Image (cartoon, rainbow over all chains, first blue to last red; front, top):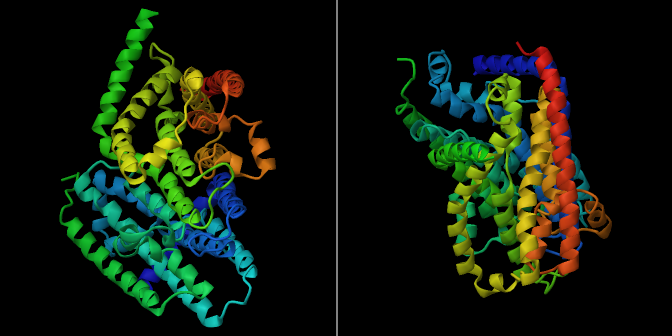
Amino acid sequence: MARYLRLYAAFAKNSILNALEYRLSTVVWSVATILYSAVYVASIHFIFGHVQAIAGWRMEHMLVLAATVMLVDGVVETIFGENMNALSDLINRGELDFVLSKPVSARFYVSTRKFDWDPLVQVLIGGGVLWYAVGLFGEPVTWPGALLYLALVVCACLIAYSLWFMAVSTVFWAGRLRNIAYLYYNFIEVARVPTDVFRGALRFGLTFGLPVAFIATVPSQALIGILSPTFALAAFAMTAGLLIVSHLFWRFALTKYSSASS
Amino acid sequence: MPKLLRKVRVLFLASWQDSLMYRAESLVWFVGDAVLPLVMIALWTAAYRTVERVGDYTVHDMVNYYVLFLVLSTLLTPHPEWNTSGLIRSGQFSKYLVRPFPYLLEQLTGEVAWRGVRVFFLAPMLLLFFLIFGQGLVGSFGLRWETAPILLLSAVFSFLLSYCLKATLGLLAFWVGQVDGIIEAYLVVMMFLAGSIIPLDLMPSAVERATEFLPFRYLYFFPVQLLQGRLDFLAALGGLAVQAAWLLAAFLLMRRVLAAGLRRYGAYGG
């Protein structure tokens, strides 16, 4: 464990040095992120200029949801983003050989090698939006609610990572599918509205099939104070389940790997 | 001229085969186009459970708006920016300069082919929509016969306008090393001001007026308005004229940027 922490510190340091070399790029990406967040928050204001509530969600609730997506997406992209985008090429070109021959867990290496400093801006903006949204609440947020929220945000990050990792791992079979990692951004796009707006089978599917609901809707409900204990437990179970499933999936996928060099 | 047409035909067929070969990738891109409109439809239909109308839109108009937006943005959005900036950065751009047809024309032909494949994904989706929403969806479709020719022209102009703006952005790679962030920032603002998230006429009036001084509303919002029959003949003609003016300006800008970039490129190339 201590070895992995040391290794991770080395990865992060290496990534900082890399980021310092491309300062302009960091500035440009930050501007893009700020614009994106501004557009998102403005859209929510525009929509709620016409309606009072959507499926029980008022504007301040929707802003909490927006902030939650920013936090989760920001953390996931910072830690895993660049790695997931690189993974399909790694598999496809047979460059995974270099990873498999290293004395370290291959999953750890391919998931965390590059730490991307650029999306961290989104975490800061998310924090700001959250502060602003909670200020609009009629009554203050309770301590248990806030702690549960934080725990569920961590769960959401792990769920999003596990799904992303599994999606990219399909390249072992699919061969050339370079944009498969891009599906993650669509998944996050669906998380930007409360799952309550969907009905029937679709809502069930987005909760337990492709668990979009746990990314932002469930954590936001915890902070608002309308989350049922069942769903909080379901979120923890889903996280544990997906971490295990994605690991088994990766182990199985590795057996399908045909290196390019030999 | 027939010689050029023959070249275009060959280029088109090559790209067409490419796009059919990589149809799985194409499907992933299509899903990317479709997600936002679908999510917005879900959000608005939930909102309409408590209100009758939002601005000038009934629930059917709203669903219709996003479906039409999806169709237009899928078919009329070329993506020359990534390829162009990539080629310039890697130096492979030189290869295209010595070919017997202009790079920008070759790229344009390829983009048309790639759009074509999207029809295969779009058609079943439209059918599904019709099955879910039925008559309501079709009822909001109100293209008038006198504005139909204007719609056709505006669709062509929209594709070309998009192409010129985005190709110009890609050409910035001659000057800036990391142009990806700039492209991303542009796409975010462009799609928002084009009406992808909410119809422009539902934005606060100051914002809506501001979009009248930008080219983006003419990419999709203007044709969607024509398709919904919200503009009379004179308004449609006026819109088309402004769109054409933007297209001309964007085309001249693209040419200038390419010429300036090539001067710079030549100075460094080996």
